[in-house]
Amino acid sequence: MSKILGRPNRFLTDPRVFNHNDLQKFLVGCLDPLPSLPDSGQSGSTMPPIQKAGPDRPAAILVPLLRVQFDWHILMTKRAAHLAHHAGQISFPGGKMEPYDASLVETALREAFEEVQLTQGLVQVVGFLDRVRSPAGFLVQPVVGIVRGENSLDSLVSDPAEVDLIFTLPLKHLGDPNNFRLVRRKTDGRPHDYWLVKHDKHLIWGLSARVLNDLRQRANQAV
View 1 (tube, rainbow, N blue to C red):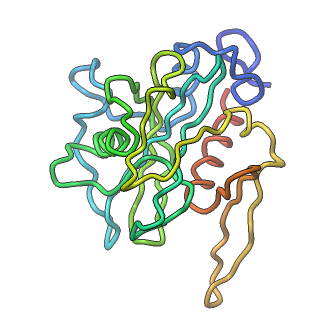
View 2: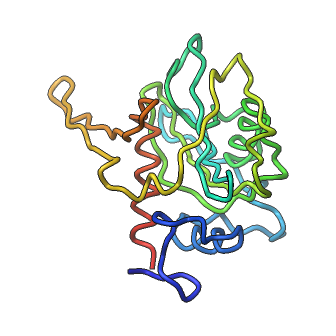
């Protein structure tokens, strides 16, 4: 079993043992790092913007980890039913990169504030997960952040123009492999497999499930 700070790695089995600093140190060890910045006090918000890759349009989502009743959870949303892309699906706060965004980190933080009123100053950005292409033609960069403080969920308010519901997924949900299933599928003779994450109330699949599985795999492989 891998260890952190001299004790067993309990990130996915008993995350309550992690305080904010412990969690930061663990995630820095298993996420893709932020680019180096002249001012280390910046949380990646001023890094150069990503270059577009072919026809893909750059976008970013924030994967926020926050404390709820002394335990770590992952903040997720249900997208509004009238949206043009991924309407009604379970997602993370995020959206396309705008010309005025200095970076994809800034995109993720801006969208999180617009969608659920998560104040940027409360988010400590710690690293990246693998980029994911969406069916709508976006190249999506997942940005992982730790929300400072306790029970900050109580202060969040969803924008009904974009979000129907705010909810959290307990971090330890990722520790049970039975909660994850890879669905094999072919479209026009080509493989289009996708992940499903088991949940009692919500259908978590596709891009969001793939992001959660990436975080789960990285945590399991952390040394």
